[in-house]
Length: 136
Image (cartoon, rainbow, N blue to C red; front, side, top):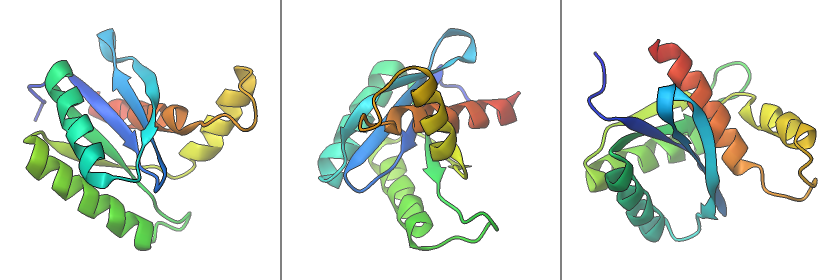
């Protein structure tokens, strides 16, 4: 089943920082920034507003262990996704985010980002790239 929305917003969910990426023309995944994730209510409202502006659905990264097991962070991501879907009225997809942070670190270094710069938006971009690849 194909989505009726024109785009997707990917989320690399963290306790303090949340990375955002968006799909651009032709299904290209673009980093969109890092936002404060400490106030979950404000975060969900901000994401819902962005989804309305972009006519987009969501892709939330699902953290798993290398062996595929899910621990507390995965349960938190699933709960966040359910709340986001209910509040925003947009479809929320879950995407395995295994090794996206490692790939984001590699890409950030190659792009010349400083080691202390946040890479959450690049991790979200990797989540979105992997999701979009499964939709083709």
